[in-house]
Length: 265
Image (cartoon, rainbow, N blue to C red; front, side, top):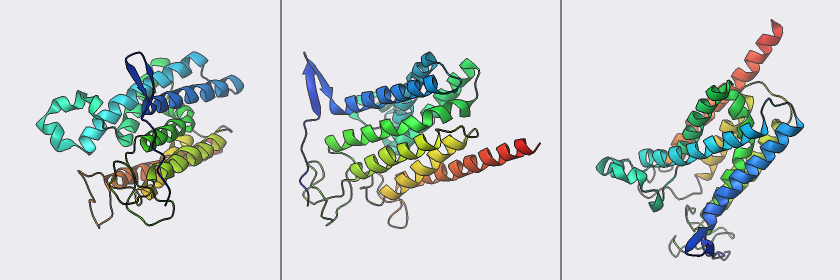
């Protein structure tokens, strides 16, 4: 068994203000995404300007925050929300959903794409390869906060989390950091180096993230208020990831089918 490296969730103080590691992880995700996308559009013909990259990430940030909070309350805390709708605005109490954030980002990108006269897939295909930076950084933040830990296990790399009881558990946050952060970034960044048909990069993102999240859910402790939904193993995260996989496959197939059809005309 490994020893959990207890890290103070507060990175440093600026006067009376406490700066948390989790907040810094969000900052790393946005700054890293901005830097890589800015570099990419300056070194290839992507049809976007550096200023538009900054705007895209600003809209994406709004989508993540609003969509993530709304999604969490709808998917994981509906009874509480229906009893007290004001809980939606009490973000200091925690509670963010990736799947809700994804929907929020898609809506934000649709609004921005219309604003600059581009199609939604043009924007999402550009953005998708850098999303894993934020996902990976966020999982490190979860690990530091000792939250979203895994199921009880006797694996030699198991850890006892301060907020997870006395039994050793899977460090599932690190599994997600590797799969949803590092591996997903490499797949999407390498795949998107060459021009691809519209929807292909976005579709690949949905496929890979959905598969990775579905897999890690077998090691991650299900949300206490939801538990297992069916079969003694199906979790809310898996239920929400399955449609992502199907939609991603449909988008990927459509991208290459429509591209081949256009080339044959």
